[in-house]
Amino acid sequence: MIFEYLPLIVFGLGYYFYDIVTATIALVIASLFVLPIIWKKTGKIPYTHIFTALLLSFFGGLTVLSGDTSFIKMKPTIASLIFAGILFSVNFTNFNALKKVMASSVLMNDEAWKKLCNNTVIYFLLCAVANEIVWRNFTETQWVQFKIFGLTGLNILFMFVHIPFFKKNAKLKQ
Image (cartoon, rainbow, N blue to C red; front, side):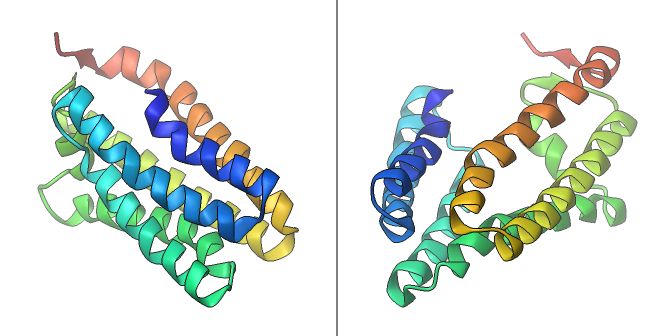
């Protein structure tokens, strides 16, 4: 859905034409703007979107109020670590958060859900490490490019790599 990428596009344009603080303000506004659009189109707002918008509002607000851009740069790391932690908890409980989020459209056995969940934990940890390396060791412009293109590319790669897994283990609900 294109509306899910709108905040990222707005952030990129805000940075390109202005600066990172202006881009952060635009990102927060756009993230909050898309929530009711998603709800209107689908009848629900995924918890991940709500959580991400709240986390973005918090770190974006800290960035704008303090003028310290490290807050917005840390947000992908912290979000990835929180998502990894939530998904990792499946190893200690019978509740699979990924299954809860995706089960309305995908049917898989519990073993496949657990494997996908573990793969997703590893993915989020890699995203967190990559973000930390980039924002701490590269220029602001390079971090913005990584945020827009690198993390999006990692998402696409993660999905692409899992196509055989889904073909083998999943059935889409009609």
